Length: 467
Ligand code: SAH
Ligand code: SF4
Ligand code: F3S
Image 1 (cartoon, rainbow, N blue to C red):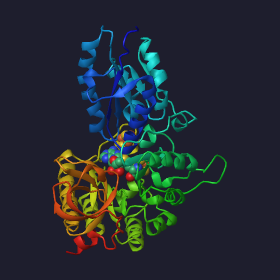
Image 2: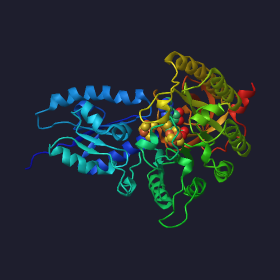
Image 3: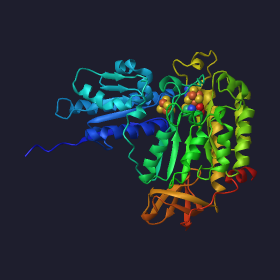
Image 4: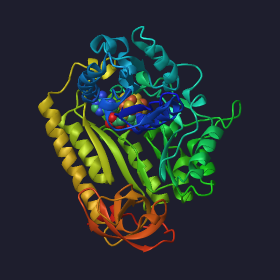
């Protein structure tokens, strides 16, 4: 009788954007054949991966405090027959590379976002014990060609279709951490979507740092497809009821994509379209490549084709040189457009980006005061949006069990969490639910019928704003 084989435990902590969430899932996929099983206790894990984000200073610093904690766990297991390996993946790994190893020499593996498929080989090298292993290449062949088919878990899934960014906004590290813009071939995306749907996925969110700049050749050598064309093709997949995409840049909101919002019923009436600022002067200094007015016009066109469309956005306050006047222009744009949801940040100077060298960096107090004024307006709009949903009927995709017995949870077309009382056989189905109550971060619904509901024709937001 041989010795029992100890299954290896894997813990992955994900920071940052949905692209990292997708990459973490794919890292788990690539490690599964090596016997690594996911668990949620870093202390008990043979391999701990931190999939990191470099977008703001705080995000990057969090990684180092987590590494301090992991170091103790690793030390406890040193010298036993089950030592712990620590890997840092993602955008901090890419941006800091050797500097990360100098600051945290107990890290075994540093791997950038474009070479996660090489993890098995990096682990093998680290296990040989000849020191830390670093791989921050931008290889010519893409990781997507080497990753195994995704294992779907649940009715919703992310699908990365585009990586990197060529826009070089003056505040942003992404073009440096993720590399140049790259679109996956449309046929590979469609094939991956079909695998997901076969495994029970009903809603797919297409991902990219600049997802609407997508220009994937269906197969190599043929002329590229736009995101709109890809969405139209995906909409044909039987069983794929909902399509979303994120994150978009206003500059790439092409006519055919705006039209898709009016013509493709499975494209959800909810769009994350970051604007960052409402001041033309700041938009220019940020190198965003569009004006406030262009943004307003895109929104108007989207809403005229799809009146029930709601928007979310990202904002940065306290960009170098931002005056009170610039800030009020942002507040004014928010009031004009009306957002169902938003993310907002204080400007954070990032090493190597042009804005970090701008002489007119603003004091922390100014940034904090502006952020709190901006967030209170955005929260007001979000509350009004949710309140306007009361009494409406929504198609809700049920995704899992809720916190209370007999409660199931799902998502509205606008990504709001919705709780309903039902048995677990509704999970994975879309039901028509009437919104009967408002929680702090969720809506309470009552199932009206199990047939697929039609979409709304009036946006709760347009009514919320009129009130
Ligand atoms: N590609 C997307 C955004 C990716 S980064 C776009 O172009 O909109 C996500 C968000 O982080 C950005 O929209 C921006 O609001 C914020 N962000 C990026 N760099 C930042 C910085 N240096 N300081 C503060 N916020 C930042
Ligand atoms: Fe960053 Fe701008 Fe590229 Fe978005 S478009 S990822 S903000 S550089
Ligand atoms: Fe962060 Fe990298 Fe995403 S810096 S936001 S994890 S692309």
